[in-house]
Structures are given as C-alpha cells and as structure tokens.
Amino acid sequence: MRNDRNKEQHRINERINVPSVRLVGENITPGVYSTSKALQMAEDMGLDLVEISPNADPPVCKIIDYQKFLYQQKKRQKEQKAKAVKIVVKEIRFGPQTDDHDYNFKLRHAKEFLEEGAKVKAYVFFKGRSILFKEQGEVLLLRFANDLEEYGKVEQMPVLEGKRMIIMMSPTQKKGNTAKPAIPKEKKNPPS
Image 1 (tube, rainbow, N blue to C red):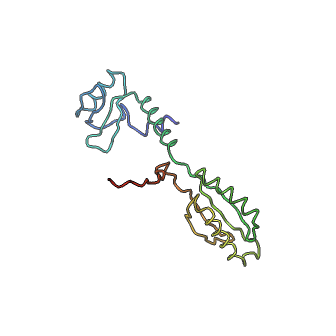
Image 2: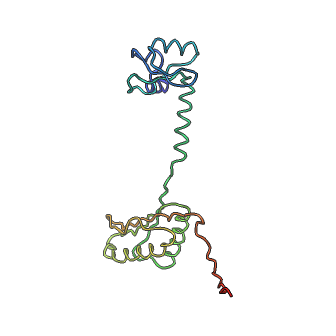
C-alpha cells in the first residue's frame, strides 16, 4: 500500500501517457524526445523514466533509479525536519495570594527555562471566589515579567481567559560575544 502511494506521487515508465517529454539529467543530452524513445533510452540504461515536473509543457522527465530517488527524497525531508526549530513552552502556575518563597522558587525555574531557550507561560489560576483578586494576579504577573526582564521578553501582556490570567514570555536572543570589552582609553601626551 505504501508503494502505491509513492507511485502516485510521480508517474514512471509506462504510466507517462503524453506524446513527448523533455529529458534532463546526467549522461543524457537534454532535449525533447518522444515518450517511446525516452522509455527505450531508460530501458537500455536499466533505469526508470520518472516524471519530475508534470505541469510543464512538455512534462520534464529524468532517467534515474526510482527507488534510489525516493530514498534520497525521504532522507532530504528527514534532514529538513531535524533542522526545524522546536519550540518548547513551559508552564508556571501561581495562585492569587502566592507567598514570596513560592514566588522565588518558581522565578528560579522560569529563569532556567528561559536560559534553555524555552518559552514560559505563567498564569494565575483563580479558584472559586478568588476571581475577586484579579488585580493582585495582574500585579503578580507584571512583577514576574519585571524580574525576568534580562532573561526574556514579554510576548503577551497579562490577559484574563476564563479563570486564568496568562502572560507569555520568550527567551531573549543571545548574540554570542559580539560586544567588544571596554578598554580604558589612555591619556596621550601632547607632542613636544
């Protein structure tokens, strides 16, 4: 079943049903050939005629080993996926009346998360009638953002969503040591 899906991805050999094709690739003189001539050339080389660009006029084809082509394409996609940046979001939960010790403990964790390159989603959860203290929650989140100012920047200011007041912070980009160290200037003696 998997092979059927791959074959639908590109038309190969006898499945190419157009009168002429444009051949490109290695060991071939590029040009427009009849499909039967191109198929004969591919067969003589022991390779497959693969339609690369079906929307061109005439369609562009290559004479290649189709299984090797699929393997290389899959490998390329895997490499691109590996290079893609993965964004991690860490959550930190507060209550509206979080005391200083708990606050400092969670602040330390948030610093670590931001230094690792993860985003931090901090929120104050209001339970029951504690929604009356939403101003305290906002003050707590703004203080949290202010304390983390050198580690990350605020992506979203405190917003009340249902029973949660949320703030998002993303890590600041480290530019590597591009700043030059400050060297004190020496006083020059005037020429005598």
